[in-house]
Amino acid sequence: MRRVTLTQFLIEQQRAGRTSPDLRLLIEVVARAVKAIAVNVSKGALADLLGEAGTDNIQGEAQKKLDVIANEILLQANEWGGHLAAMASEEVEEVHQIPFDYPKGGYLLLFDPLDGSSNIDVNISVGTIFSVLRFPEGIKEPTEECFLQPGREQVAAGYALYGPSTLLILTVGNGVHGFTLDREMGSFVYTHPFMTVPVDTQEYAINASNARHWESPVQRYVGELQQGRTGPRGKDFNMRWVASMVADVHRVLTRGGIFMYPLDEKCRDQGGKLRLMYEANPMAMIVEQAGGSATTGRQRILDVQPEKLHQRVPVILGSTHEVERVTAYHLES
Ligand SMILES: O=P(O)(O)OC[C@H]1O[C@](O)(COP(=O)(O)O)[C@@H](O)[C@@H]1O
Ligand SMILES: [Mg+2]
Ligand SMILES: [Mg+2]
Image (tube, rainbow, N blue to C red; front, side, top):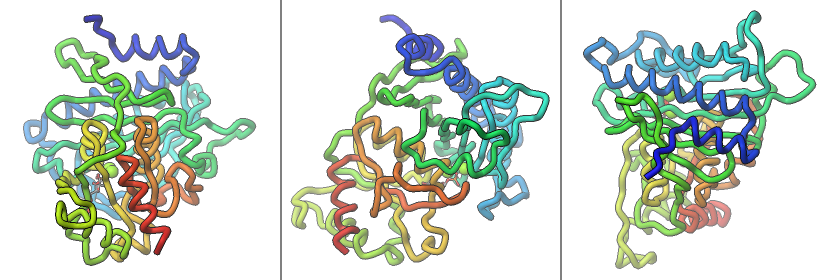
């Protein structure tokens, strides 16, 4: 079997007119950063990398050492390549400007450097999520404003999953493609072409400890699933919750399912739990590109007009028939 690396895949995408040379470079640089993060994640306690960094991020959450390291790796790797106008990170309050003496490019890169960080210390899979937007033309200095584009404007999105193997899942708007890190060769190998999310499923993912805080459409939907074969759905459903969005979404992408972090009384004031620009938008693009759906319960995630960089939204994504059902329950109520 012909072994295709990420580099070959991207060159072929470029020849087919699906990526520009700069976008190809950007993805290669992100992939290189992901390899460095994977090394750090796997060292864990050996390099004293577990535990808290002793600082809080812009979300008011305690940062783990690996949150800080992954953020630094991504920022440094992407600063000098000349493909970016600016970056934004879940871990940093302001837009990260490219140093004045480096060349600038036409893209904006956004990322959640380490997703699922509460799982680091218990050695459960974590990930990195990224999103790429165009830097709007005619603007000199990148400001927060430039980033506030709806998710449908993304030109690429992807995530890395640091699990038993390290995976890079990517879309440039032509389906979803997965690569596995070959540690001996140091390259990502194309192992998962055109990943798809089946429209039906019997598996759901939600943090059930929030059940009493959910809105009634979610209570109704999950209640029906839990009644199984003897309830209105007439079939049994299985439940899984890793609490790393990357791992939960990867399961949905691999064998179908519905993933929900809906609006609830605990997170209502913030607008939701998950971040629009670093989590919801890139995952929504990936899931839609794989044939699934993604909504807030009220509207398509990719159509949400962002109002601020660190905005949070409710997220319901995965197998289309289930996402449509939960969304319909919201709209009915
Ligand atoms: O602990 P909870 O409330 O179940 O939340 C889990 C969710 O929070 C997150 O960990 C948030 O991501 P970060 O680790 O990047 O802050 C998601 O990955 C996950 O889906
Ligand atoms: Mg996250
Ligand atoms: Mg994070």
